[in-house]
Image (tube, rainbow, N blue to C red; front, side):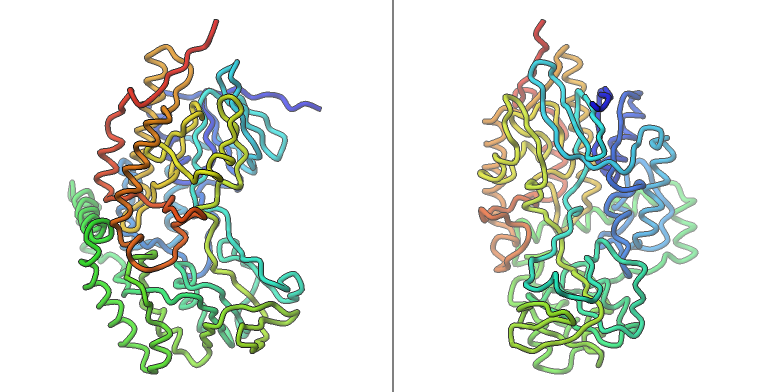
Length: 492
């Protein structure tokens, strides 16, 4: 039985910050012919999926929110549930549930050259025909679990941190955590008092600086909630502070030495064992990888219940894990804090653009590239929010999302104004932009800091982060250069 085709002007894929932001912008512009489709069962995106113990934002939450939708945050860095509550509030405020369909996983999409529109298909049998497609799926949505030998033979409980098994009681359990990234930094301090044993498998020691998170005082809440302009001033001040940090990451890596001393002090104040301290001290420049913040990380690692294993995983057994040193350790629960498919997330797409050009093949051969991270040559009317090279190591991606939404809206309006049906970037404009971007990335801490991070793809190219501070990206997307684009008109 052939699925009925549902026609909409704009199809938004994803209902996190990007999807909600695009939806509310369309509503504010008076547009109602759009649909949001989401794989999960509610709004929130990564903040709906990630519900592990200790899960919280590592950017001050005053910045981690829409600029036109302030919120009475309780803490400087908010936990996942408060952020999720905020996103649901914004979605409901603009009536986005009427435009949303949950439980829809997009399998493939193709551009019809004759009709000048996209055809999008879901695993649930839906078929959408849309003039514009907005990809708001983000990058941190596909968990990555390494292919360990014997994992399929393990009889205990195993899950990824982004798919936390809330039915598992960790009290009195022997727990192994694989990975020492942002998730592990938050999980381990939150569960150390519950578990009987904690085995941490560390491939690379991370830099962890103190977390200055705290609840707002009653006086601070009064000022922020009742004094006109106070919250906006705080937001602007935090933004400026983060931009100064970004200057160190992107232009003056040597300026990060002060933060690195803070990181070393954070280790020395807690870890008294010299051998353990050596294993926990990174041999690369701070901020080369994601900058992590925690007050409980090192106290949890010196807890007598914790074993730090730096030899790596050789293979799993039915009852536990054998490390590369040959030692076998039995565990009841394994938690993979191993991150997400980011630089290779394109391999999960099936998108064919103009003349049947396969986006996966192109990005597989050339690496992920887009013009300003939003539009891609030969992919008409397709807009990526948080696309290639639009992440930050220092600032809020929500700021970037808003820049990209404004940019996409300029293009959509330009299509309508020119009486065209589609728009896409010229290949030369896209290539020139990426040459500029990659040249600038060569001077950043991510390139010269001596680490091996998930920012780099299989070609050895940083396809994740923007090469400068957020203000520069705002300037790059503020005004549309129509000469960089090709406008397509429907043939009669």
